[in-house]
Length: 388
Image (tube, rainbow, N blue to C red):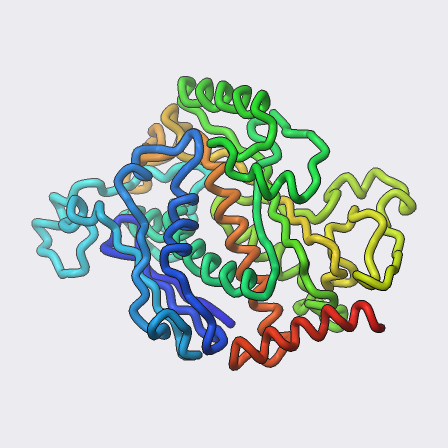
């Protein structure tokens, strides 16, 4: 399975083509839109989220609510494009119109793709870089992930997310999976502890007042995963490696870990490895889950736990120093609409990025032309963990 996204931040629409989904899989567009709405929420978001509704439209690959096995095309229209048609339209313009063009960007923002992308593609108007490098593209990735979450759900695999830290304030409670699942959307910063939630809101408010931004850490959990998905045979088939690449590919994500993550570097081996146990009901399982459900690049049947680190958003209302690429004189960087904190929304994006990699790995592991055949094989693998 693979997907391709297209579209600019202020263009007419985002487009996604997904190839490789099994035929005869049920698709619920209302559930997809529910996931899209969750991405737009969260404390600290900017005005853009009040403009765009991000409802999806499926224009190929689905008939009467079921996939056909052919490529699925999803579009997400940008309601704000009516105000940007003269700036972002595809039609040619005259030299006079070019000279009078509004919103031309020549002052790159530190931390963004602006300057490096301009040098790479030789764009003198850095809006050509900004429009595609914008996190707006993550709406398309969530649409893909929502379809993959539907696939996983129909295979009895649960996938959900939460925020574990924002601006240095941590939700450090010892929560079981059922608690996290119940409370993942309990508040607008997506932590479990309400006192921690209010402290985080205060920190976000302070950052906004200071014209600054803050980042954090999110967590994704995949429950009831069958054993042996991924491979130890080659580096590029390891499931944790694929998940890591996808997570770090999200805008502003700078790190990823699994289970106890980087804490493993300061612990003894006996405190990190997970002892193997067995009973006749669930087969092989682990006494603990420090490794986050992954051994040797494969799922081991325990919940897969993925941690992602998001840096503070680089667009600041108190902009840092930059240089005008036309005059080479120092300036304060250009200010675009932005969020003071997008970590709660980023947890949703991360969840859906992981959903794609999990679904992709499953479709590679088993015969997947038809959904019923896929489900039969997944169930058989679960049974093997008991009978092996």
